[in-house]
Length: 107
Image (cartoon, rainbow, N blue to C red):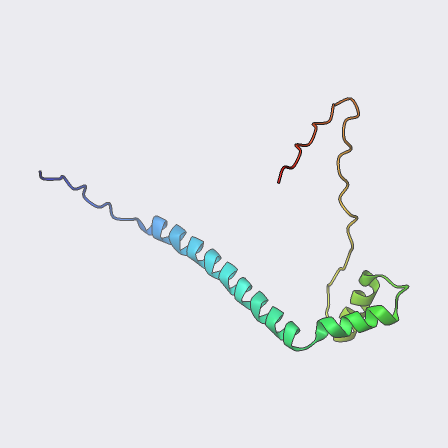
């Protein structure tokens, strides 16, 4: 049996340019991940987490946002906004809906 083969369609320059843009975006994402991993390794090796824990232990009355904003100021980081979002609230269960009984465990 002979199979018929489709002729390959050549891409236009516009298609190549779109492909290049998509590839550049993927490359930028990979670079961000690489830098994030590198930063994470440096932080783990520098004992920053332990130092932050000591600071937090000494200043039990202050919240995390205040500590982090002071650290950002001391380091000289500009345009950093540190906020703390409230904990997400669960949707209250419907009191009219009957509860399903749990299955008994048999060993």
